[in-house]
Image (cartoon, rainbow, N blue to C red; front, top):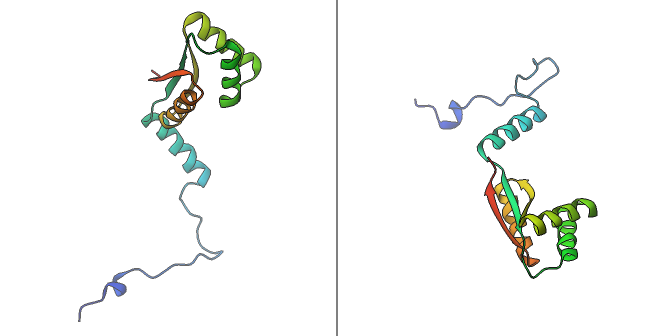
Length: 118
């Protein structure tokens, strides 16, 4: 007589205090190794803000503070780099987050692009 599918499945096991410890990695080990693997598979991207003749320097500082949470000193330094050098890398992050930053920067009226970090 053929066995049904249910009969072929192993019995359900329950853990008791006498069971040997699991050899599975701890949750924190799994997350650390998966983060390391994600970083290897997903390269980082640079979010670049470009100089423009439209926005005031004080406004650029305000946007950098509000969007990235930077201090006034760091935001001012980046704004001066944008003004003097024509651009500044304001964030290095994963591609998806970078795309959201770009959309936010555009909504504030700033010119921004992304490029792959080498």
